[in-house]
Length: 338
Image (tube, rainbow, N blue to C red):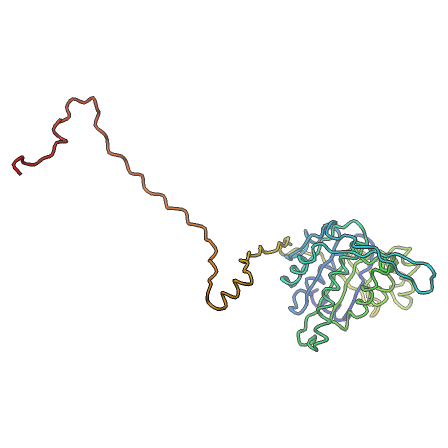
């Protein structure tokens, strides 16, 4: 089955939406794809989820918990929409732990984010921050004409994408940057694989540029979207009755079967390394050091604990009331004539 996942990745060669109802093994096939992608050292996998499933059931991978307080509203900005005569307002967001997130991305090849934000706009704002960070890195490489020589491919695996790429949220002006970045994904060796319950929940400006793999879909989605996608397919009338674990790839009209995912290792929460405190040196001290007139004092080292000494028993003292003691014992022993 590993070859099957590799072939699916080659056929997609870009962005992919895994669509289906609950309990159709959407997350299972996404985990298999993630494991297959991680086997290539040129691929960097970034997992974004809002429910703690991957941090408990996926392979060994560092993960970072993003709390609701880590994403805060920065300010409300006004803008004038084209073709309107009234002013609208949009929110801007600040990532409070941005330095920690950047260090997390810098130190690890493959990562997972557990986003605990309650507001869907906050979730999308954090995802936009992560994607934009990678986008700027790839853009600068492309500007220096070293994108292909470096050869890094970034894969964003988005669980519960109807929470992160909701059509009503992404349509807002605040997320224009995300839509623009997604248009340039393939040129910058960036890719996205999403899992969704309903195709209608995803922003059409995002999903229209993505391939689709289908599991059993709802009748509502089938009537509005899926039936037209499968109008020339042999699975047009079977898509609502597919058994669990089976998927259809409409572009080649192929059926795909997945197997249960067996965990290899266990994810672990990443913690930043403690930074060493450097001795502060003033401007005058730097000048003196440069001319050899001053040497900074070495940092005091903790003294080693003294080794325990063996106990020495004190000599027994004679009893004061003992009459048998010689009274002349303390007298000096020498001749009077000397």
